[in-house]
Length: 261
Ligand SMILES: NC(=O)c1ccc[n+]([C@@H]2O[C@H](COP(=O)([O-])OP(=O)(O)OC[C@H]3O[C@@H](n4cnc5c(N)ncnc54)[C@H](OP(=O)(O)O)[C@@H]3O)[C@@H](O)[C@H]2O)c1
Image 1 (cartoon, rainbow, N blue to C red):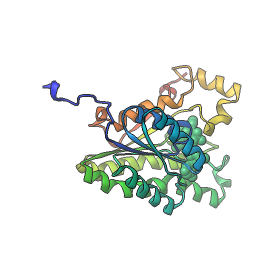
Image 2: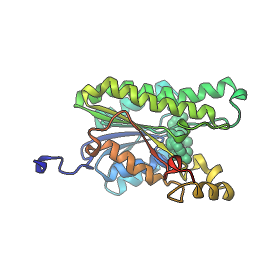
Image 3: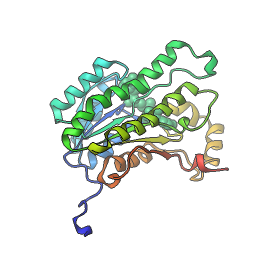
Image 4: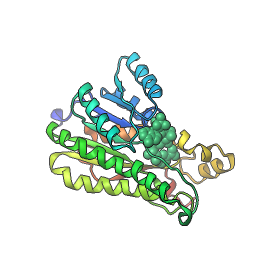
């Protein structure tokens, strides 16, 4: 019977993947991985030049990409992003909500209102706006995969990035709620919760040799994560290989959170 299973469980040929925050870091690695696997990818961030460069690099290698700049904290930008994606490639099959912000460090008791409002808008509301726009397209296509970037900050307390952690917990909750609501239409929704990954976002942490050493020692795999470590999991969640997986938040942290080291 298995000769009739998917020919290649990781094939994304013919799929359209929209990835926010894909000009660098984790989003960039995800865009390359999905493009190499056959998807037409949308490269998006606030900076047009950065998106254009990534887009031309991917197209030069014979893969398929389009550059559509967008600030995910602006609803009109999100609507334009989806409309332009549809014009370029058609309906969205894979949505990766990866762009996020962390504008403030320190005690929750001192967090300014505008910092929290920015966190909510960029990290949570954008994801809901995007999901609302693409879910009908996925239903029309017979299914789709939405992947939300959460964090291990969603599952542990932290005295310095509490507001950020709250928004990341909301991403995991949103994945569960959307998964329940749209599973009947074969729309799968999952989150990825990375540990410390070597990108600009977390540079202040991994660039500090003392913190880095402590982190590596406390992690069973004895290293911090790389963007491609997360891209492999995103590819899996987008592909037929994960066809029966929905509503989950996959922790990708080298074992940090399961360890007593
Ligand atoms: N790195 C880690 O240790 C780590 C750990 C756990 C979870 N995460 C999560 O992983 C995701 C990616 O983080 P990263 O480490 O890859 O960050 P990064 O290297 O700083 O890249 C962030 C990307 O998002 C874009 N971006 C930022 N704000 C945006 C906005 N308002 N609208 C549109 N695009 C925006 C950036 O480009 P522009 O500046 O041009 O807009 C860039 O392309 C985030 O959701 C983060 O919370 C990261």
